[in-house]
Image (cartoon, rainbow, N blue to C red; front, side, top):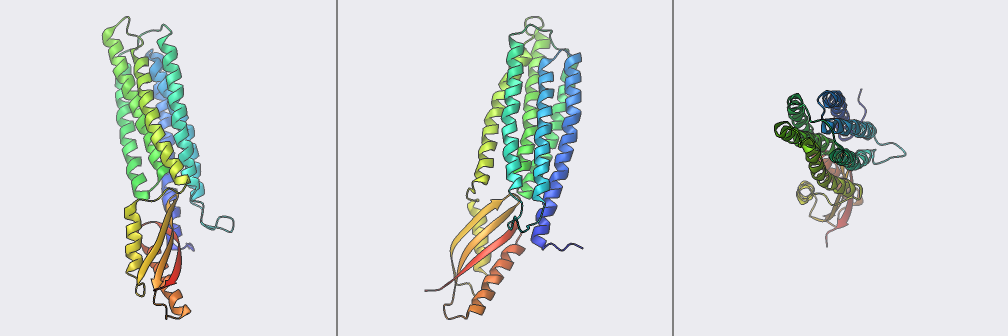
Length: 300
């Protein structure tokens, strides 16, 4: 029987669902590594081999994200009274850093191939890359939708890993097409395309890194979320006004610290009951709130 409060059980369920999706991501990338490296070797496409190396790095990144979700699924305990939600943005931070590592590795391979003579790629690698791009875009959209529903930065970055893979694969497709059509003298077109894709991946990686750092540093939540919290608290019977309202995101949940004003002539017991009603109302809301601190102030 589940003894966890409903709001903590919901966080656990979201974390476990996220972990299952990441396992699927690892499986997809594992298949991609085999297809890319084998296709690159047989089709003389070094950009495709470099793309396979990127997928290996994605697997390591996904393992970190999976571990983060497993930790985030744990309920609060004596050592972590606010839960283990910070594991999720920490995993997201690691994933964002891996995007830069991935871009660097692929760029290094691309530059090496540009200055090293090599065979031109075979046309059949275009068919393989087209299938890879479609698969990656489909899985990226699936992860993105889930990241929005669960308010998970880690899943959002995991989604971007698949998007970046689709970008580099699409760039490789364009480069290989140019090399195949151009013939001798155009062998390095796929490497130039991979190098260009690295710039796009690194630029978006910087955006993901800033989001991960912002969550670790308790950046302010969107204004509409605070408005919703205030609206719920203001409608609790006995609450006459609101003062400060501070909200911080902790992984897959939100922690709220709010000041409410009540009639100054009320007894301590009555004021406490109103504060408890505010807390209960916020915990029951669909805003993924797992902890509420209510400060009661007399109405002047």
